[in-house]
Length: 257
Image (cartoon, rainbow, N blue to C red; front, side):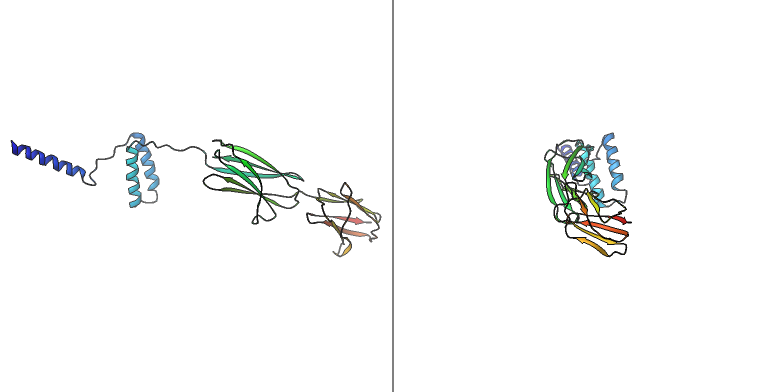
């Protein structure tokens, strides 16, 4: 009887050793839903071939699924900003942006740069995010009477990355008018519309050949941004009038009969 007990003990010990050997683990069992998820992952991972790293990943992934670790697909929207800009009138611009995936700590910094998008931007405003899980819309108006191109940059701060968007807004269209036109005398009235005139404003008149026939370093404008040019004494013909200062330039053509 002692011999029988000894034989039984050896058999049981050998069985435990065999079960403990690497590579002899029992097959991993998955539920129907886990199996479907594993096969989809495997199909994606091996679509361009299978190697040792892929095989090891899939083996560990199956173990994780079998361990009943909750796995869910995150359907929440990603972090994104869509930015638009427009000119309201000659003195104001408007920025509008839609945001998804922001948090309560998200802040938006609005920056502005004239003419050159690759140059230095100046910060002109900060807006705190509302921290919504769904999309949010924001608006920011800027007093901007610059006649040239203005670049705006929007930065979303406190996300995992610093998201930046850039938009270009054209300057307002200024207009130079001459009254009457055609001109029948040596006096004409000049009017500037949507024209920034702080500082000296110069005037040049050229003939049809491009030669300068009249020039003034500074013209004096009334409250309507208009002035009277008298005693021009120009011969009949077509002319090109240009007005300029450090802010903007405008031009028009007129005829003397």
